[in-house]
Structure formats: structure tokens, C-alpha cells
Image (cartoon, rainbow, N blue to C red; front, side, top):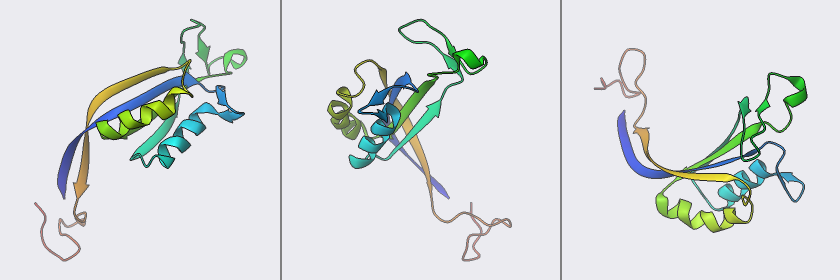
Length: 126
């Protein structure tokens, strides 16, 4: 298999798990808008501990403080497509921290080699 690499932009939105947009979880709204915009991919990661602008620590270790854990919504695509998406995000993420990071995407092409090192046609891969 041959790796292909490309430059990309990673958009990360940091929010509280209980943040909502019109009675829907904010992270869910962001993922659905990214999907509707045709962006390459989006994932939501739930934190086990963190704090934000309020300086109040939210943690999963204590039951009484396990509400509103931090979440990070990560979206990766080309810089042009991510920057075009930012206005759609602006109305949602007003109280959230949003970061943009340049990154490199690696994809492998071709059929995977079998356990004996051959491809599906029986040829040895490099």
C-alpha cells in the first residue's frame, strides 16, 4: 500500500457536554452541520476532566461534579473548506473556544497485503 499525504486544517471546538443549541446538544449540531457542509469528517471526544473560562473544574472522578464534562468536536478537511465552514459555526460556538491547526493527513491506497505479504492478486507488496 502506498501512503498519500496532504495538507489539511483541523478545527477543534471545546465546549461543555451540556451546551445546547435549540434543545439539541451543541456537539451534535456541529457534527450535523459539518456533515451537511460535506466536510471530510468530524468526531466528538468526551473529556474526563477539564475547566474553561469559569475556572470550575469538571471531572468524572466525583459523582457530584460529573455533570457537564468537557467535549471536543474535531473536524478535518482542506483549509479552504474549513474556513468556508467557520461562518456556519459562528452562531453556534459563541461561548466556546475554537482552535485551528495545520495538520497533515495520511491515507494509504491500494489493496492491503495478505498475511503472506501478497496482494489480492497474489503479487508481493513492497
